[in-house]
Amino acid sequence: MQLLQYNLFDLDDKGQGKERRIIRKLPYKYSYEFLTERDSRPRKLMIEDWEIGALYWNCLALTGDENEANKLVRKKYFDDFVSKNDLYFFLGTTLQYHIKNAPNPFLIIGVFYPPKSGTEEQQLSMIDLFNL
Image 1 (cartoon, rainbow, N blue to C red):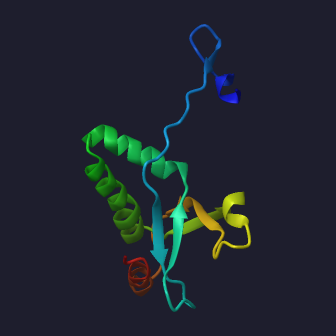
Image 2 (cartoon, one colour; image 1 turned 30 degrees about the horizontal axis):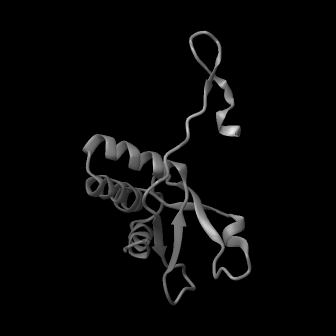
């Protein structure tokens, strides 16, 4: 019922609220696998950021092919972000994963990728950490 309500902040040319559209469900789950300094085995966190969904839909519209769209998403999130930027995750959780039986209740709800800073040695170690 709530989805059938009008959006007060998105007005049409007559000043009326536009009806909300249901957002398409992303048909894939994306994740990062990485090591921290104290890890002996890789961690894997699912990416639930709206930005990766928007990127996928835009790539699909551009290419018309799901495999090509996924290749472009991977290139952006794994090649471009990791090789050209420092990479930080914003973590969150949901009730579904926060129950005690989940081994790790956290999800990546945002990715922050400022330009790299520091020595070349630090930059290379970041690339090695995220090499999948």
